[in-house]
Image (cartoon, rainbow, N blue to C red; front, side, top):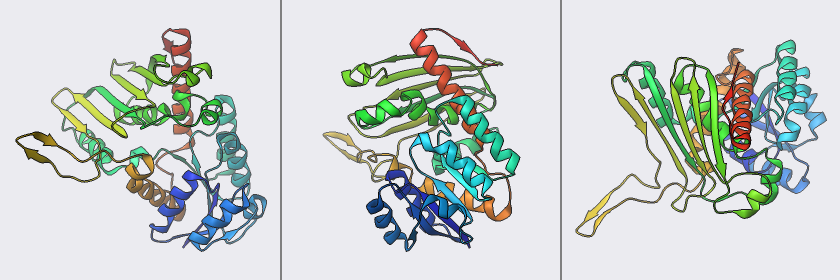
Length: 329
């Protein structure tokens, strides 16, 4: 049995706690949070204990930790638990600063610790089936990828002010998926951003709408369309065009039915937000982490993947704000 402590009892901590409860061979043993009431509420749901972070680091009944705290705590906690000999799952990003993230991953590697980054979209059943089909050669050589990522509504302004911006807090997932699907590293980044519908986001120096164009050295391309508002629900789609065909993954709806009458054809609404849209992906992701811990194997999403996505997010930020092409080494 892999025993897990969850650091951070907020929204994403609760999502991961539910995921652990659905994974055979894993159990939540401890919860830590700066808000005692939040820690206690989640601990009671999991049948776990509330402990201090420093106590968890020396707890013999904890094999691994899930870091679900605010981003500015991630790097320090990853280093602390790497040195404590615990396996680590960390929500993205490791840090908003690339240099700090590199230093952190260096510590993990020096300690020989297991570190997995939280890029749950790679574990979505539909997206994974799409990737498997590409790898099997069903559409030939990949030429272009199109990603659509739109949230139902903007997050609170205080989140915008500390999140690192739309490229680091939202598009970073799409940038990771782009690398995954293109099969080649990105050589150049172009991006544009606007505050079209939320002036407060613009005043905070961020965008509510952004488009990114990525290119590899061989010429493969990816476009990413991001918006913090979609009036019709949580919009997550992929299309990949190859030399012999095309494959796509469409949105997930509340039910898989279609009603057709003389008035037209209707579909159920889209799933409301990421907690429900990616519920299965979160479980699959934690299952993959537990398997890596048990087998002492490399996790499928690494610290290096986290750094690569963060570099792309930083390049997109620069490209949009300076209105220029950014080339990557």
